[in-house]
Length: 249
Image (cartoon, rainbow, N blue to C red; front, side):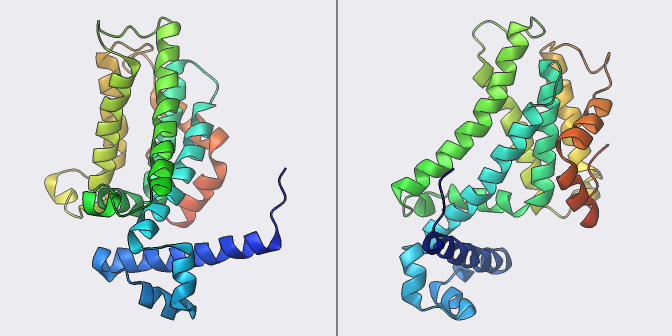
């Protein structure tokens, strides 16, 4: 194990403080509210200290996105390690996705911001590659389970359809739904009272359409989700209960 020097620890701690203040500014005031002078003033650092860590505010935005993406990678890893058939393991990633959406709702706001070309292009190539690597790791973990479903002969993809195509469909469904849940306070007025449980239901219907066995009509995946929650994510379950954000059952 590589030993982290005191100097490196101090640098990491300073960077975390900068990111925490920056996140508060972005969430309360948006992109234009993020200001290097205000970060420096809040932390009682010199402006030069802030620039030593981040050359511009676009770099900070990507760093915030990477920070939460790394948390998502870890959640996906643990969810995918749930013992069982491929579709049960995919349910594990589904639970991980919901946990992530509830604990880090601000990430979806950041993601939309990051994809604005004027922000993306001003960030460094290193930061952009880090973000893309995190995204690819998440998608690869799902694609691996889809491929396992094919290998088990529990899933037969249509001709010309790849595991990545199915991953893209799931990604679009889940990411879009969670972005709406995090940003739209009017969902209940539209008749959507439990957006998170709806996501899981819709994903199961999608997988049933691909005839990924066991089908949800023959198998109670809510029981699988409960097992996943209590075997893979007990620390997060405790945090969610403290926040009064119970997971969908």
